Length: 249
Length: 249
DNA sequence: CAAAATAACGCATATATTTGCATGGATTCA
DNA sequence: TGAATCCATGCAAATATATGCGTTATTTTG
Image 1 (tube, protein in one colour):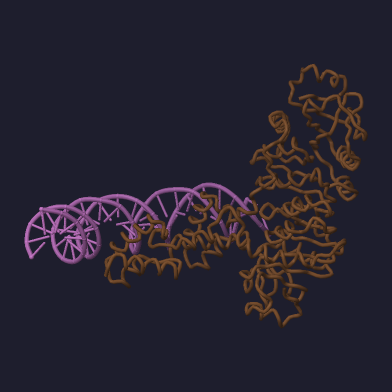
Image 2: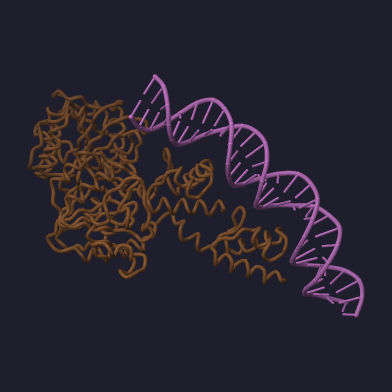
């Protein structure tokens, strides 16, 4: 049997069953395990599959279409995410909200960090699922079509049964006196539940959202323990928040 | 024997068998291995075949199974999805499994259909969330990194509290006598729960998976109410399944 | 037609690739 | 943590490849 032929067979098996065991294939093709190992290594280098301990898995499952390229103020959001990632410690149990800023945070969480991440966001869950050392738990529920997050009583109930070390949340609007507000009532309910379930709540928000408000209130500004914007902590825009007991990064 | 004549023979052999060994051809045509080697080199330069170590491989064979961008056997899976979508009725409460075939079904569900769709798959949930008239409910749980689906006790418990009109599931392996089997124990548990929670279970499987089996058993073939493959219902390959009480589409 | 030019072929030799095995280190799982 | 499994690496044997060269067709050309 030709090497090429063998590799094609391996690819077919991976495509068909999504995953294979090195030993299974070696036995099926009647060649040594080493050979299959080398084949899989090559195919992995060619990005035709992904080698994992003991076998290989299909790329098709891993390719995420969730990575949107045109995110508003991505640079600012990346700066916020960079600050936020510095708060993460091995072994922490955290919650990640939906939204592009949290998505950015999810994206840059280091591979080697051991975390348990809960999230209501489908894209965030997909992004995190690519990281080897992160235990991802999605909170189920009715899916909000706009935000692609789980909402509703079920999700809220679930959240109420957990205790997060840190929760990283976004908000639609934030104001020093009126607190965090939203356009959407369902989302407010979810965020209330998250804040209640968190030892520490971290708000991620670009400065553009500062001093804005809307109809439904999530919480007072005091309910937030840490606020992260893309600005330097001593920026004038943040002065109004300094009076409160909030750590500003 | 003319050079041209020889090369034609090589090409037809490659087309017929998808692959050849240099040594085989040399022996068959009774010329030196060097000559065949040179011939193959030329034909490779003309892109009439692909030279590999030890032999040559048909171009068709290559492009057929080594696509890295597309989903394996997408055409077949689309055919299956098309049959499955015909079973959907307004107002139904259904379950959609993970996997590329179910993903394909999710993709082609019509916009105007009113459905309540439960799913454990993050990509499927995201796909469905784009459809206006579909109420998407994700079942939460620990996320399996390979399959990007929720697994574990929590997900299973959730599923047990629902009653689906129809569940559309895939399987790793299926055999008329051994039933549905999987590579992964966790996934078997989820599927068992789904089948138990469904009034009718519909298996989506490309014919390539027929008559294959693996370590862990999901259910007997009788637990399936409807089986959909890309084949015509009267295909010979499906004969073994006709003895059972299964509707074949 | 015949000589020259060109191409094809096979052989020998040096180089490269593939493969299985052995060893020691890493990873996983109970 | 310890046993089992998996992985990386080096090595040697087998096999495949490239190349030069001499011999033998085949074609060209005067």
